[in-house]
Image (cartoon, rainbow, N blue to C red; front, side, top):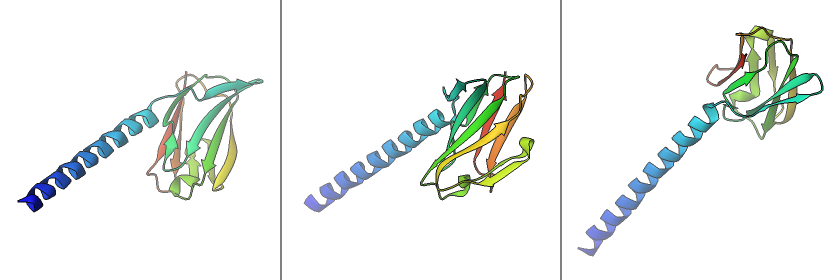
Length: 131
């Protein structure tokens, strides 16, 4: 009888932990996909900061149109496919260093333009909407 009760208790704890883990991952995915305050102005250029590790964060960015722009891709122990980035609209592709910063110059974009970056396998992406 004690063995059955102990088995049931362990099962409940494991299932509860799995549910909490899954809910936590969904919340962090939603946060990663939302547009964040990752755009700053330095001199006459706007700088868009994107973190590359296990995908790109944030996934969606809104930036000012008709402004010279730099996308700053930051890696920190990145060894997955997000370290090989392509930005087809700019004709850009590069293997990022495992840790460091890579700067991509973006000429002024018109209102309504969208620039998308993809990993080498097109599993992960990020989007910059110019408004």
